[in-house]
Amino acid sequence: MWPLFRHKPWQKVLKDTWAKLEKGDYDWAHLAMTYWPERVREKCRHDKSLAIAHELEELYVELPAAPKGVRGRKKKGEIA
Image 1 (spheres, rainbow, N blue to C red):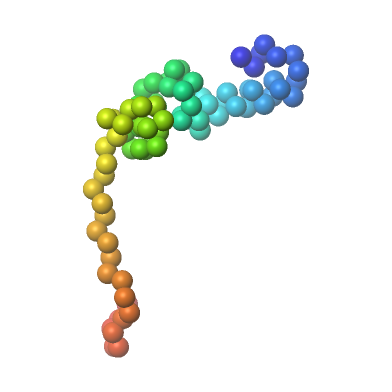
Image 2: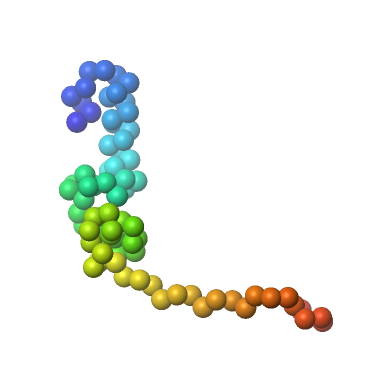
């Protein structure tokens, strides 16, 4: 779309934005889903907010929670 604009500053902004869209920086956008559905669907498997944005919550796979470490004060004589 950027080649359609004659105004050079707008053309530059649109060209830069399109490059970021192609790179995957704006996969939350519906335009990204239209052009690169495979890439966006794959990202939806790991990113819940993307899955919600594209109404693909069924693709999201929640990873098991990591075990929490023990917190608290060290006892006297305990080595780190």
